[in-house]
Length: 283
Image 1 (tube, rainbow, N blue to C red):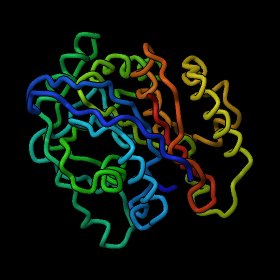
Image 2: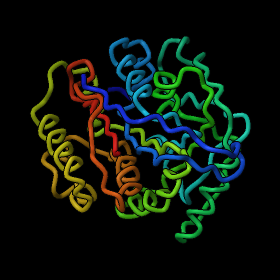
Image 3: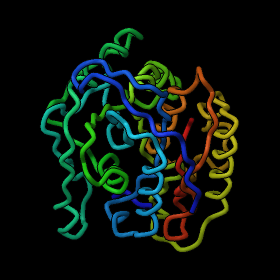
């Protein structure tokens, strides 16, 4: 089980030019890169949080396609998920039956998969394929809230292990996709300690880590973000395991060359507890 307001920032809507999905796509504008606090399936019952996600999506340029990097898929080498019919992975236990009936029939993105493979191999990343592996809840839950029409092609990419510098370099390798109308979408949590999942009250360690992360992200201090385990206050409490933090490093890597403005479209705390809702937009 995975559980856990802010102002939306508006940018000019990009109108993708020319070629259909399946070949390289050019866009008239550079896409932002985002990291979302994704929530458990019950996020979709939280009307306030869901509305914040919907407002964020409306403020973003509409993507040609979405490349999703979720905390819930760590597999070496970097692996491309389903590209034709994209199923869902109900990777959670003990929830009411209705959560296992959620559907998100987004189109596949075989052209994006080819482009990602090309970019990663150019940077000496090994690449594998898992054609039956669908979107896990870290991917589809925020997508249901943000793009409920399920009409944008989606590809999920695994994180090839939990090495901070490797993940940052992975993001750097993916950066050219921003010029092609692709929304690089990291999905995780900046604080994620399951022992505090349902305890009321926001612990001071959670506030301290969230404030540290907000500062480092706003300054685009990439070295500090990668060295969070030794530089961040209460890192071991905030992230006993850190796969939920990892996607923000991929997202940061994708903007390292440009160093755009950083904003936080969603902030606050899930159930006023230990899980920060802080979500990040680069550019």
